[in-house]
Length: 72
Image 1 (cartoon, one colour):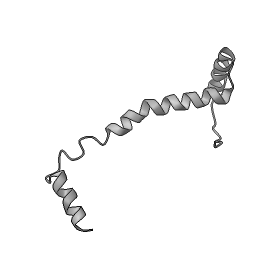
Image 2: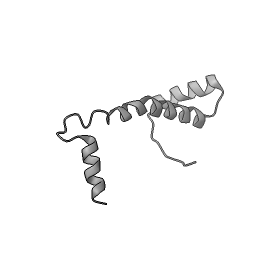
Image 3: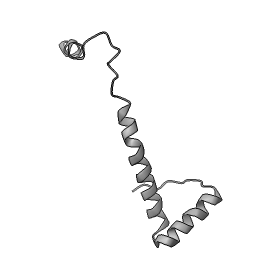
């Protein structure tokens, strides 16, 4: 596990302390869960960016693949 240093505004630290107290969990665990949720929320959006990349191409994808492989 890696350690990172993050600067947070005092208001966020105070709000985080309220969550930590309410859940009776370590602050680091709450932060890890928050980061995991953020990554999960943005992961589908990152993957969606690749769909449809070839729709404007004038060459067939299979033809392009075969041409590249013929160079090997």
